[in-house]
Image 1: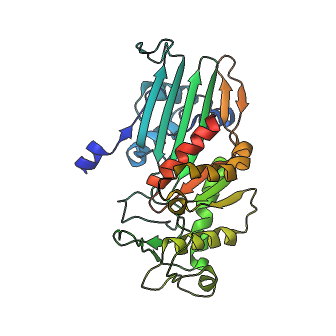
Image 2: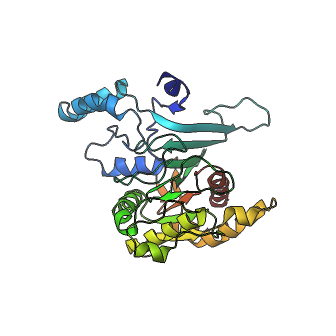
Image 3: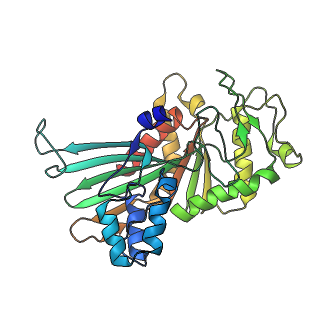
Length: 333
């Protein structure tokens, strides 16, 4: 535990609600019964249990003015687990730059979900509450003197019940452990949470699309009580099961869209430029989803992000990192 706390990449901010995106903060401030009251997001706040007694006190025993004093005093500090990076651009190359005199500031904030944490190869898929392994909300913020821009993406393990015992290089054997019927409630809870937060979702699946020895098919799973046999299934089988679950939810594409892109197959041989094929497929949705932007002078909201890309590969790491970085550059322009 001490080692984890010492190396767990935890971050806090004394002046900024680091648990929420800029748009979420703004929307909460507009709709809140008590404007100006600190309202962290429990999904991304990792010290929920430690702060519970403080939160009970401030909510149930303090007036609005007392809560503001309590929050401003900094008695309760929210922690996120993830990554925070910043870059400041000045007027002259090589000059010493900080936030106050920068012409532009760029921030990258990645917030890991506290709902389903665990070791990389031991925690996979979804749980019964709809939480998924390795779920991360990543926000890119660009601030100039005139405007502040924000764009959010999410990643997360495929929201079905599956395991992977160890890592077998070249085979990626997985075990799908529940049928479509048994999986559907958890998958629905997961996407319900995403829709309540982001309004619309595009599920970007980067798994392999073809397997030489498929031991599972979506059609077979619909008619069986067990989704996969003891021998396991391939990446492609897992991807097909994911698509089956999205179809089973019965939601219109305008709410939950699905895009499959065989990343390893497409970029094989160093052809990373082929990721642009996926970006072209996503462009209509990227344009529709937009981004958050506000005027720094008037505080006027200039644009609202109305949808999010949810990207996955098998681990939600290397392939997802590349695609999310390309999507961010495409949105920022």
